[in-house]
Image 1 (tube, rainbow, N blue to C red):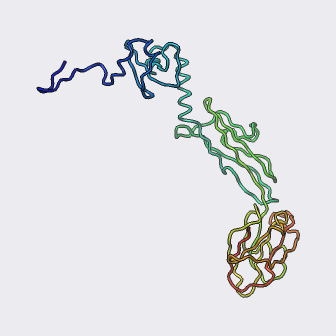
Image 2: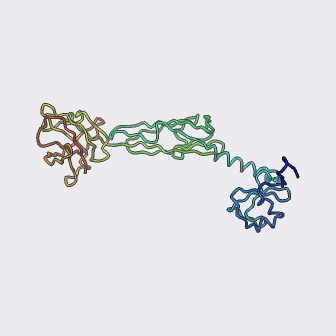
Image 3: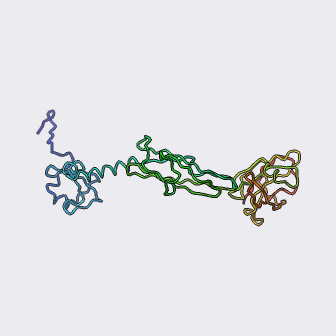
Length: 286
């Protein structure tokens, strides 16, 4: 008993939270029915236990020995080291970064010699992998296990890079994609040659028939042209909007186009029916 001042009496107990003193035995832990938060600690006979409602024991109910107690009492150090290693691997996983990135797009008809390189890091530092595979094979993987060179390709091809280091594994997928282009621009000519199509001034990958509002400078009298693979053209759904108003005065012809990679494909050559003389904002879409 300690007297503080003249009119304050502090009768200290072993614990500031009275609920900690409710358990005098292991049986008290098993039958515990007092409301407590997760992580609440109780000391019974000199041993600390932690409350976890997801833990279940036939002897202590939802109370588990505190981890430092478990470590001090355990003789299975191999198991402990395995658990610690697993924790380390979870907190500090192996990281793989492959260049040139997750996907590269190439024009149809081109020939690509796939070349990949990668770095492997752990805990923020670069490490050297002990094994490396591309599509589950070591063929084409460099002796230092940090790059790959494969046979030439002309069609869509996927690669899976997998590396190993001290029992850890990391992988990444890389894709080489081949696409057609679509072309747009202006010309004073009513028809276009193959060369004029390729040199209209604008091009992008032909992933769909639509295109956001784009400026076409028809000053001096020119036709706006939009050239897309004929497989993307459907006259019943194709729509052209000029300054927010739909335009249906179109001239459409189908012809084969040879791209810059000498690949031949059928294209829809689309232009307005009359020459324009100003700067237009044209959108192709619904």
